[in-house]
Image (tube, rainbow, N blue to C red; front, side):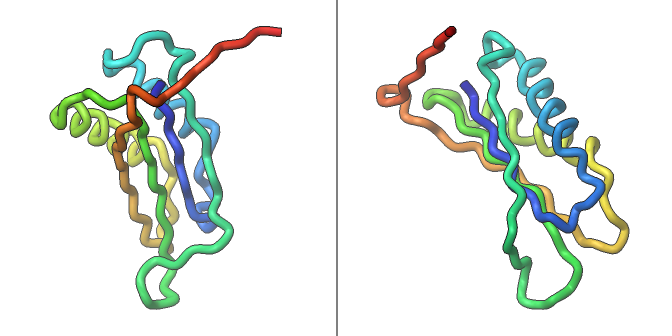
Amino acid sequence: MPHVTMEYTPNLLELDVAKTLLVLNQTLLVSGHFGAEMDIKNRAIALEMFQVGTTTAARGFVHVKLALLSGRSTEVKKVLSESLLTALRDTGTWPADVEVQLSVEVVDLDRDSYAKAVVRG
């Protein structure tokens, strides 16, 4: 725990997805709110179809969803979301001809029903 999902629009051609995922994980690790570095998991999803607003203007977005086990305070969630937003903004190479919106959402996973197993072959 935690799980990070990054959705992004395919018109962000210079976005280094692998680097961005690593930076997001590093940001969470240095926050001090998580145990082992291997507990932080993320994935990226390039959106095939998207629309921003109601015009055909060149727009795009990156949205990061941080899913945490329930029980953290609103203040901790706010610090984490702001840290991830800063890391995302500072990591990306953003195209001059595309208006890009960056956002971060923090959601709770029910601690009582979350299950996890680590297996080794």
